[in-house]
Image (cartoon, rainbow, N blue to C red; front, side, top):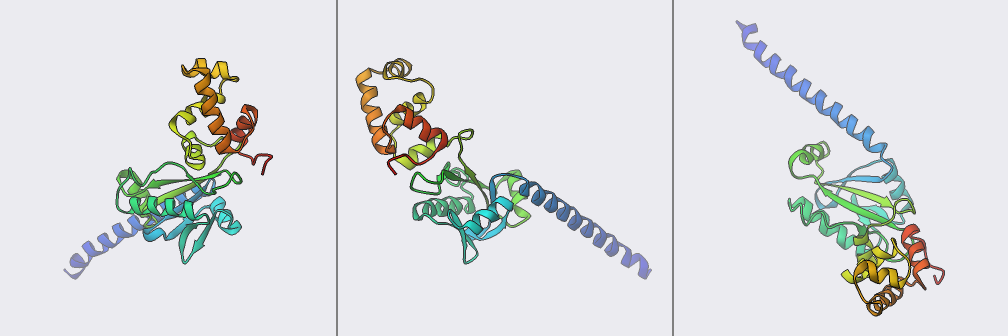
Length: 225
């Protein structure tokens, strides 16, 4: 009779143990996968608390040029980037997925670097189960630009304070060359194209379309710097 009373408790304990084993296995698979991602990946908990960084992410923290761990929290070095990162993480923590995914966040306010942070909320649906492994509310991905991996237009718009019309010009410059071709592609007059180009050159500190293309493609500092 005593054994009959004990057996259900033993069965429940075994079931719970198996559940913990499954969670540990899932966690191990997740961590191994993230360590093989080339981008820096950070899992962040409440109040920006850093709970996990993959290999490239730890390298970024050790370098300290873009991101640091300050009092246990993931912190951007640039004050402007830190404000944007803090707002995105707070929105993600509150379950506001739309506000928690503000688009790429430039991690530097100058031309040098070309690295952007992307915030992915982990507070809804399947993402929530992923975040639960580390009590994370958001994942932060850091990507460095290159000629093969240019920065997104919305990031350039933020970094250089480009208007919507100027962003269209930048996009077209990457596809065609010359004022006439730009005007035909965009359906604008050549005078309007010249005005927008002048503003883009001024804001990006470039001296012409060729230099602008090189800047966008490689995101390298201009010669004037």
